[in-house]
Length: 194
Image (tube, rainbow, N blue to C red; front, side, top):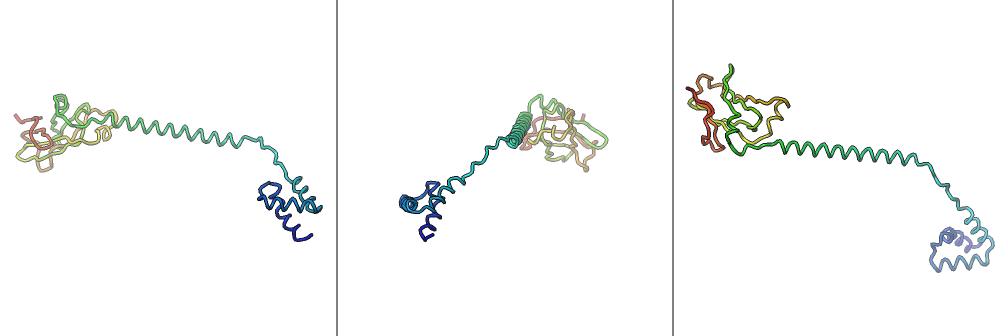
C-alpha cells in the first residue's frame, strides 16, 4: 500500500457520503481507477452501511403525551382558579368612597361590658375604623378603605363589632359618637347621650 492508498482510505467515507470537494473527489476517483485494493475497500464501505430497523414501539410517546396533557389540564385549572379568585376579590371589594343613608343605617353604636363598639351589618361599611380622637367624651371615627371585612370575618358572619373607645375612656363617659370624613369634618352623629 502506498502513501496515496492511505490518503484515499481516509477519504473514502467522505466519498461515500458525497461530501468531498471537487478536487478531492477527482483525486479519489483517479486513484480508484488504478488501485484494486482501494476499490475493494470502497465496496466494503458501501455494504457495511447498516439500516437500523424502524422502531414501532410508541408506548414511551404515549406516556409523554399523557404527561403533557395532564400538565396542560392542570395549568388550565390553576389559571382558571387564579382568575376566579382575582375576579372574586375585585368584585367584592366595595371601597368606602361615599357616605350614604344606607351606609349609616348599617352602623350602630353598641355598649357592652368591656366598652363601646361600632356594630356594622351586611358588610356595606367595609374598611378599617380610624379614631381621630376621643376627647371630652366625644369619639370621632372614620372608616378608611381597606381589605374587605369578609377576609377578616368568617364567611357566614354578617355583622362586625369593632371597639371604638380606649381604655382611658369609660363607657359611661361617652357623650357622643360622630362619623367624620377623612379630614375630620363631622358628617353624621351616630349616637348621642340623652
